[in-house]
Image 1 (tube, rainbow, N blue to C red):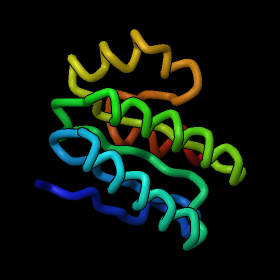
Image 2: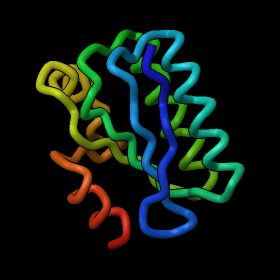
Image 3: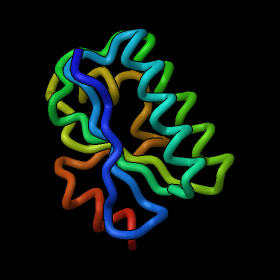
Length: 115
């Protein structure tokens, strides 16, 4: 299984988390752990890069909700980019776009994050 990775964005308090191909229960738990690590090291603005994610389960959707709540409580911002068409449909149908901004590519997300 491909794991999540944390990468720097443009400042110490901004990070990109690259999601795995399948965002199932195990990967969702790992993603949540990666976000908690990022928050502990001072990142408050996180972009979830879903460019390689083609499958999201209910556990993956739940993780988005938990992360949005945790990051907001920490005074930060969460966004997602590069959602594949089927994942984007699911994301939108569940109403997540109302509280987690979704961008078509990383560059757009990064610009909006620092604005």
